[in-house]
Image (cartoon, rainbow, N blue to C red; front, side):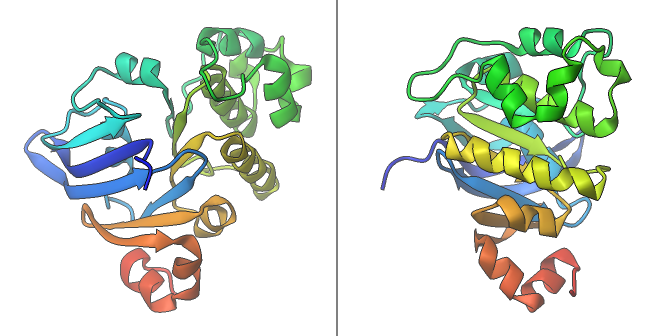
Length: 239
């Protein structure tokens, strides 16, 4: 088998003296969408932050594109080709949509198509007429689109999405799901930490379920949706 694009092996991480992750391992392949699922406090956001270098690992190893990135600074990890969209979006409110995209711009990467502004506006059509509007004046859904578009402007090989569906109106979930599928179709690997099970099922090939900081299941997303006992025992979802 080909080496995965991102490989997390035996990851342990936490905050201060409090451990959160206990020996977590997972892989992510090019063009694959993996949903990271779990109850509140299971460690989803902690894993995303550790993978991005925002939280130093206490143990374990992280490899990206064949290189060891364990303990590297976030800017080095970003330069290596990992994009990150935090839960709170963090767009630059005083910059326009076009200026936010310009800030995120990085040269194209070999083997992947370039995410030009025109391509990003095609991916997120509502942003096109707003290119000169300050980001702070956008709605929450528009800011989420901009946050993802700005990350893609860096032409990443992988994108880490932390709760992208959080707080979005149902009418915005379908276009957001479509954008994630287009990213994967273009060869971008996506690791998606998500609470919305139906949204995750619409985009993910595979699911990694976390329970109390450890992997409780790693397999097809379809298996999660078909196994009510698994969903109830790990996620607390009975439907």
